[in-house]
Image (cartoon, rainbow, N blue to C red; front, side, top):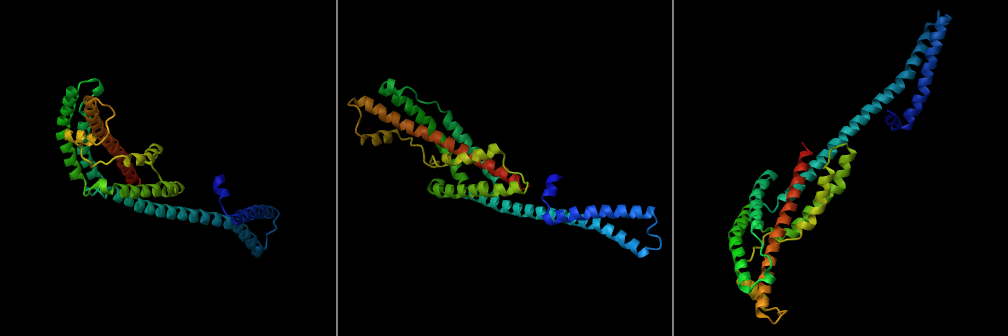
Length: 293
């Protein structure tokens, strides 16, 4: 109540401070005059004093009521304007998010992503090759060949799920796409968020907003369309152009095989991190869309 009174214009507060005491004074004079029969045969004066007394209360009441209605209308208009901007900006953010994909909305994209998540999970479930540097060359070759044989069909499943999910090569356009997507997010986070708060409108939870501010590093960290190299001979061919760190031929071959394995195994982990970050982005987009309902 005090805050509402303090927010009124100074002119209105001055009028109230003047009129209300004068109105109370008029009431007192009227009651006192009635008691002492001042108003007998003074009908005009009686009407004048009573009218002035009413005006002293009517003016501040009208000003306060009109001010309240005016403020309420201004607040309602502000909320409408903010919600219109929110709908426009959030829709633009979602359209940029969907740009590289064949899905027309977030629900369809989430269904497609679930198939791809299963493919990534299956790749991560393939047992790792451990202790290569302490094992003979043939054992290392057999272990890595077994790993590649398990990965090869799972990689085909991943590439098939990715192809059905994307409408263009995400890797080629990832940098420009992510830059555009981040720019739209920052416009929401640094612009719309404050307007929504001023208009007493709901916004993302602090946890969700913090997650969305962190995903951009992960989204730039991997090329999700690069295929896992399952031709082991190419691993050793690539290393043949590098000066060996040791004169031991077997150790050099082991290092080449294991280096190729680590590179391809790391790609699987990078894919997992990328799609996990993208999942956070989708959850944030869903939560933004719910703000407009």
